Amino acid sequence: MCGQANCGDATIQERATAPRVKRLMLADFRSYADLHLDVGAAPLVALVGDNGAGKTNLIEALSLFTPGRGLRRADFGELARIGGRGGFAVSATLAAPPDEAHLGETRLGIGSEPTPEGGNSRKCRVDGTAVASASAFADYVRVVWLTPAFDGLFSGPAGDRRRFLDRLVLAVDAGHGTRVNAFEKAMRGRNRLLAEDAPHRAWLDAVERELAELGVAVAAARAETVARLAALIEATRDDASPFPSAELRLEGEIEALVNATAAVEVEDHYRRLLRDGRARDKAAGRTLSGPQTSELVVHHRAKAMPAGQCSTGEQKALLIGLVLAHARLVATMSGIAPLVLMDEVAAHLDPRRRAALYRELAALGSQVWMTGADPALFTELPEGSARFLVTPGMVTPYEAMEM
Image (cartoon, rainbow, N blue to C red; front, side, top):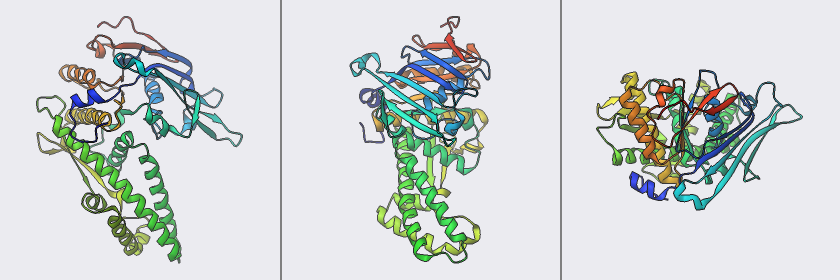
C-alpha cells in the first residue's frame, strides 16, 4: 500500500488489487424477489432500463458492502421488498481480475431479519462466516459512488458537502463513520445538558472531554483526506481533460489547528471553546463550535472560480473528475481499487465528454457499474464490457446493444 498522497496512476495500477463482482444475488431486496445475476467479472457493467425498472436498486445493493447506509442512506427496514418475508439478503461473489486469478473468490453477504419486537437484525458474512459489521468488508472491497443526488452539491448547504466528505473519508478509513456517529451522539448529549435549568458541571466537563477527543479525530481524518486528495489531483492533473481539476480546501477552526498542532493540544483548545461557549450555545440551542460547522470549499482550478458559480455542465464535469480522483486515492491508500457505482452519469454528458469518461473508466482499473435509460448512451463502451436490460424484477443480457 502506498502511503504517499502524490502517488501517480502507474503506482496505483502496480500496487492495488482490483476485485470485481462476478455474481450478484438478491432475495426480497427492494423490487427483486429473487435475482441471480452473473456479470462475468466484466470491468464495465451497464444497466439499461426504463425509469423505475430497478436499475438503481442493483447498485444500491452493492453500496451496502461498505460502512453506512448505502447510496440512498436508507434505513435497513426500508430495503425489504414490499410483500416479502420482512427481511432481505444481498450476496456478492468477488473475483480477482485475470492477472490476479490466484487470489480466488470471496463471497460477501449482508441482509436483515425481522425481530419479534418489530425491528430488524442486521447480518454480515464473509464466505459464510458471520462478521461483526460491514466494516469487515473493507478487507476485501471498497466502494465509491456518484448519483444524481450529488448534482447540487456545490451550490447546496454546507452540510451536504460535509456528508459528501465523510463518505470520501469512509472509503479509506472504515472507522470514520463510527467516530462521526459517536461525535454526533456526544454533541446531542451536551445540548440536552445545556437545555437544563442547572446542568451538572461535572457531567458537562465529562461530555465535553469526550466531544473534544471525538471532534479532533473527525477533523483530523477529514483534513488528511482532503490534503491527500488535493495532492493527488495536483500530481495527476491534465489541463486538457474534459473533467477539470478541482481545488480543495477544508475550512474550520479545529481543522486548521490539526494541521499544525499536536492532537492533545487541539483537544485542550476545543475543550476551552466548549466551556467558554456554554452560555452562547445554551441560548442557541445547539453547539456552535466544532467540526459540525466545517466547510469543504471547491474551486474550478483552471477558471479560479468557486464550483457553485460554474455552469451546471461544468459542475457535473468537476464532480466526475473529483470522484475519479477519489477512486484513485482509495486504491493508493487501501491497496484495493474500489468498485465505482455511477447512477445516470452519462445522461447529461455531451458525446465528447461521454467518450472521455469511458476511456477514463477503462483506465481506472476498477470495476464500474453504470445505469442509464437510453441504450445509445453505452454503445461506445470498450470491448469486454457487459450490458444488461433491467425490467421490473428481472435482469437479462442486452444482446441487441452494439459495440
